[in-house]
Length: 266
Image 1 (tube, rainbow, N blue to C red):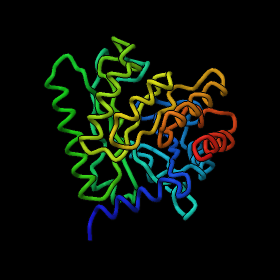
Image 2 (image 1 turned 60 degrees about the vertical axis):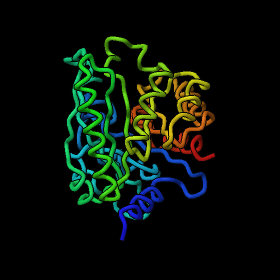
Image 3 (image 1 turned 45 degrees about the horizontal axis):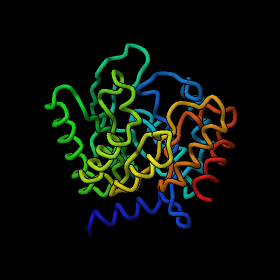
């Protein structure tokens, strides 16, 4: 037996067999941002996660796997993705100019939970190059562990400077660099921020040697804006989306999910 078979089986569960695309609902913001609309308490999260059964994947934090396990039991349920890293770059409360990351579980824990994949961050561009070296080493170690255990690895690369230099977040040259590095480290999937421009996103996707899933980011002021960005991502060659707040913060998350499934799989 070979762990590569495990990866193929798990990727086959995640990606739609006809469209070869995937929509993962990111439902793990609480671990880095605290309570939010759509995830204010555990009862709300149990009900909402069950309503998202049509998603191709649903990503939650390690500490909620047991509490939300019913959302993943059964044939017509989403793939379980686990948000592996804690990071303190993105939060609005008690922000840092330059944050840090740490894993909240080991790959053996992911396997025992029955998960199909994990998401980890790769932060680049620290003032201290040693910190970037440590991030590369950490992600490389995770990539080799995922290969041994047959687990899907999705890396979300980001600029460590984005709090101080917001332009880093959507600079296509920086994005192309860190997406390509993520793929060559061993990511099966690369989660990429939308630069806001179709040709820029296409250039990033074309330069990445792994399938790229585009992030939804903060909830858009108008739903049509989020739909347009999702459609743009798919036209640019994305293999799917990782959308969270634009789905679970909606007044009807299940209906909103259906709209994005149409965009991804049509």
